Length: 47
Image (cartoon, rainbow, N blue to C red; front, side, top):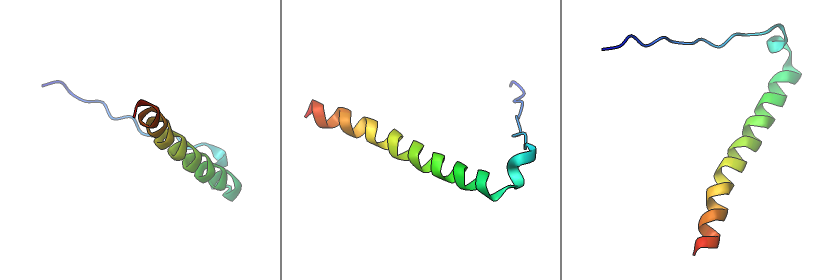
């Protein structure tokens, strides 16, 4: 078996700021909506 290397996320100096956390939450919500809508649009036009 091969050994698996685990990559840990690097925290930057701006991670303590609440504005960057709000921006991250907003970006993640937009990304999840966009990622869910792309297959829905494809299946809609295929039907």
